[in-house]
Length: 155
Image: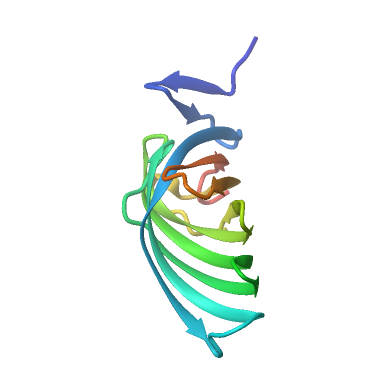
């Protein structure tokens, strides 16, 4: 039986171009939200600046994130955003940007994200991938999954 990855210290080392799944969790460190236009009723828009701390397969303390939020009801809506992560993915150092799309309601938040093509730097140059999370209200740590591949930057 062949394996596309070797296990080292509970993390995986990707074979160039082969997809690898990694997991972990993140916590919200800061959330600053400002209304865009009218702040009453629905629908309404808001912008949020967020700082997250990732651990696990992605180690990225103090990310930079900006969301645009569309509230379609009381605590119900959708959002899009970009998040800059600087740190490591399974031990490879660099930075990259995630494009995020999600929705939220009384139960919690669901999000899918993809790596912005060309945004990987350092040992993460050539990074591609996608993942997501489900956050249930009342939980502090949010588990995520991330499936990614590393290609040579000139590929």
